[in-house]
Length: 131
Image 1: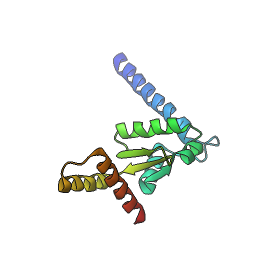
Image 2: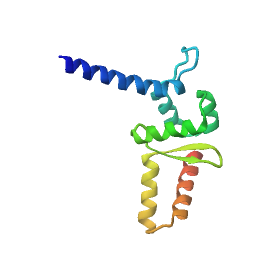
Image 3: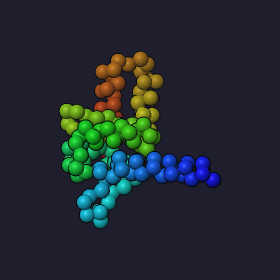
Image 4: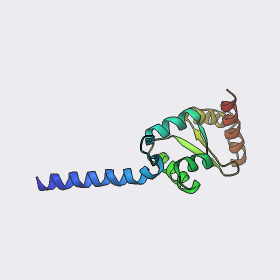
């Protein structure tokens, strides 16, 4: 019984630590407008492109911390893939459909350089934004 209680306390501590690591980014001071991680992910999946500056300001964090959190969501498998556009300060969500299109291009053309792959990814993203 003690071991079970200890495991439950550890589990609760892990959950609390995760909450604390995300809370600063997703809760406004009045707590009425709380934004959950799932809400953020859902918004990202709909928009598929977010301004790093605007989102960092919205959540009162640095752009670097926002990028770190986005990478964490990727690693956890909660969002698919993403590209940080340092020049335009945007984050582009890369969906499985985008990856499948890229796979088809590579299959059709054969070996591509990194530059050619980059151009294809850009083309796919721009095409998607026009739709």
